Image (tube, rainbow, N blue to C red; front, side, top):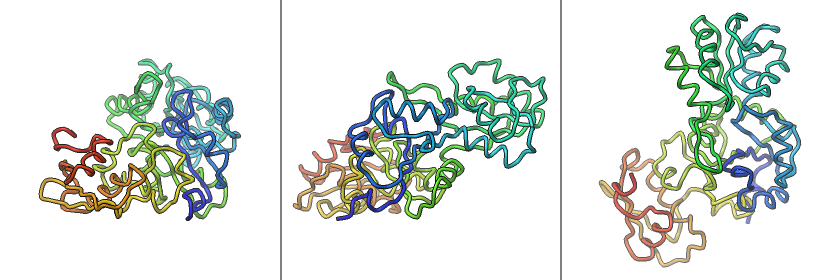
Length: 340
C-alpha cells in the first residue's frame, strides 16, 4: 500500500475550510500534518494578513508552520504587478496594510487615493473596505490603471456562516468600470505556481474544500488535486461539477493523507455497479464490502463524468436497499428535483 502522502513530495494546502474552520482545526489535521513527510505549504487566497501573521495563527492552533511555509494571494498579486510595472510605480491599494506591505516589498509605492495618480490598482479582502474605497479604485481603473485582484472568492467562510468575500467587492468594481481584473489567486495559476517556486518539487498535490477555487486552480495549473469535505463544496457539487472543477481524489478530511492512495482516487469501485440511463443513474451493490462510505460517491462520479448525462441535472437512484442507504448517507438518493 502506498499512502497518498507517500505518493507526493509537496502538499499545497488551502487554509479555511481545509486545515481549519474559523479558529478550530479540522478533524485530525494537526496530528496528520505533523506526521506526513512531504513539504507542507499553506496556500491561501486571503490577502488580508501577511505570511508571518498567518503562520503565527497556525502555530496557535497547534500546527508546525513558519512564514516561509505560507504563500498568500497578496504576495502573488504584488509579484504580478511588479512583472508589468517599472520600479517605483504607484499602486492604489484596496485592502489591508498587509497587502500594502507586499506592494512595497516588490519595489512599488502603495497609495490610497486616485489623486495620487496611481498606475495600477490592487484589490484584496479587508472588512474595512467601503464605498469610498471602491470609488477611488473605480476612478483609477476608468483612467486606465492596471487592475489586479488578489482573488475573486465570492464568499468568505466564518464560524457563523458565509460572508461576502473579495470577489463580491471585485464584482461591484466590474459593474462600475465595465472592466475585469487580472487575478493572482486561485482558480488562476499564479498563486499555485508561486508556491511551487519555494522548492524543487516533482509530485505536488493541491488539497482544498472548494471546487471553484482550489480544484479549478489545480486543474488550470496542471496539478493533481484532492477535495476534502470539511468546508464549502459537497459530494453533490463534485458529481455535477464542470470538467474544470473535477478533483483526482476525494476524502472526508486530511486524515486520509495516510490512507491508501488507490482507494481515494475518483474511480470505479468493485462494491458498486453504476448504470447510466437517459435521465438518471442507478447504483447497485455488487455484494462486496465497501469500507469507505465515500466509495459510492467516487464510483458514481467516475462513471457519469464523460457519459451521456454529463452536464445535465440527472437523478441518482439506489437500485437496491444497500445502495439506497449508501446514497442516502450523502443526501444523494432521490430525484433530480430533490437535488436541485
